[in-house]
Length: 81
Image 1 (tube, rainbow, N blue to C red):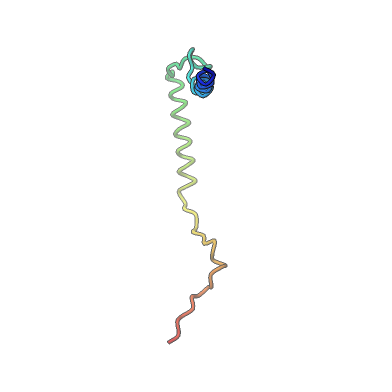
Image 2 (cartoon, rainbow, N blue to C red; image 1 turned 90 degrees about the horizontal axis):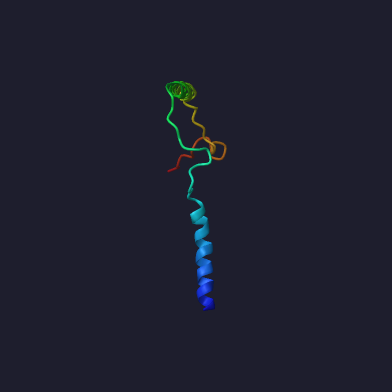
């Protein structure tokens, strides 16, 4: 009988963290509401500004760098015959 209660206690302890992940009464912030037209415009403006910034910073590719350049010899040795 002790083994049964021990197994039941272990099962309850293992399922408690998974049960805690589900909310019963909704979010802490309340239910999600629909966006107003003003909020949609503001979000679109922010998105356009973000895309313009990303495009302007990535339009010029960075020069290729070789981190091993000072380890390798400058000119490969030519085989002698």
